[in-house]
Length: 144
Image (tube, rainbow, N blue to C red):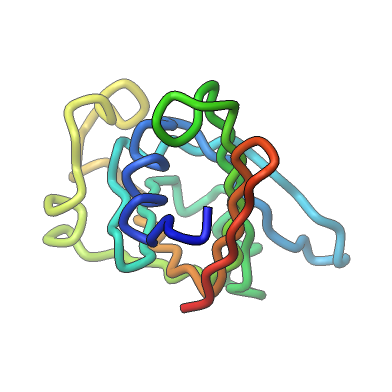
């Protein structure tokens, strides 16, 4: 899988709607929760998620922006065995409505009834520092 590029990984990640986002809590424990990426994955290493400002996730990121993401897909590259992707990165909290609009999809209305005007809305941008992927017996690691 050495020939798999970051762009290939991003395309695979787009097809896996939910990722597990892991943060560190105030006492140092690891907390994970499912987050929908709404197919918003940039092949330069960025993933975007929406949340409420009052969520524990946001407080965790405010204290320690180092996060982990895991993606699991039923079929990997070229329809092969399942794919597993682990992302270590740095999260940024964005509270700008123009950024909300740039990353909004209609599917988000399900969780945020007022759209980009939802009170307490926050956009989480995770920029990957390292991506490690497994596809059957093959694996690759990309540092950014």
